[in-house]
Amino acid sequence: MQTGVHHIDGTFHSRAVAEWRYSVDMTEGVFDPDNELLAGYCEGRQVLVFSSGVVDSLYGEAVRAYFAAHLPEGSWQYVVLPTGEHNKNLRSVEAICEHAKEARIDRHGLLVAVGGGIVCDIVGFAASIYKRGIGFIKVNTTLVGQIDVGVGIKTGVNFLASKNMVGTYYPAHASINDPRLLQSLPARQISCGLAEIIKMAIIVSAELFELLEVHVASIRARRFADGSVQDGQRDLKVLTMAIRLMMDELCPNLQERELARLVDFGHSFSPMMEIESDHQLHHGEAVAIDMALSARIAVRLGLLSEADCARILALLVASGLPVYHAATCSAALLVEALRDMVLHRGGRVNLVVPTGLGCADFIRHSEALPAELVAAAADDLRRYCNTRAALSEEDVHALA
Image (cartoon, rainbow, N blue to C red):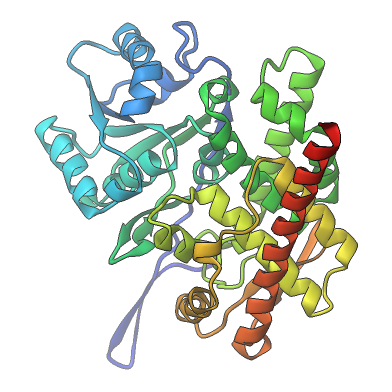
């Protein structure tokens, strides 16, 4: 594409091209003293490191020791941020910018986020606007972070009771995934991360779906453990496949100029579910319910077989994820979510639905999604959960 300034009929026209390149590094022992990956990215810069309270309790001592060993004294500072969805807001972004100003971080400086999606989102947003943009690094400590936030370029915060309403597209200077960090995650966070992996399997990879069907129980138990043993290598294959698939889908449309995106599977009803539950539903849990609902919608529209839908629901349940939540699957809330999709996606719902295992399509127009259909799909899930609960009780009685 030719760039430059052209003067035509009294109007100056400017055409410029911005090339965005970014990478995701896979490493083990990112804070080990002899691992120079992170230090290499920070060399010669003023660095301000941010983590959450939970991450600080787990890794704070190692992080401080790492930077003390690799960077000159006075060239870095470490700050613990209050996190949680209630702190994912503009005030937190302002606070990060205040810390950066007090630390005299210049245009060459770096903000480093050590944490999950919330820390990386708010630090990335702050980096994108502080001095009109400085570098930042993501060290992703959660499975959701390593699969989702860590491989994209979106930053954002919640605003006016809407999830991620305010944000930017801004690639990180570096994004680092260390599978060892996943070992410290509680079971619920592993399940939430699995929701994002399952998402990619359903929409683009039957191979990944089948791997998960066979091995998800082991993955949950091992938490992507040591890659030097056979089971660990298989777990890491699942992780790296999901990352590659996510990046393949994101890269052609980094700024979301095209509003119909397969990676929005599970992310249509779920934002409103998270907000309505006052974040009692974690992100991955809301995504799982959204995927289950979208699958049942697809069945009712004749786009997905009952057998494939049953396998999707079974994999979600086996991953420790919910497929129904009464308080947020009400007909009124789901209709409101549909209206919000239309506003967010340029006048169309662009609802992603599975059409098989490893393939998906869009329901583009709201006319194809009457309230009665969506409510009936939600009721299918309610009955599914009730049936599972009844069967479980019968099994208990039989064992007694």
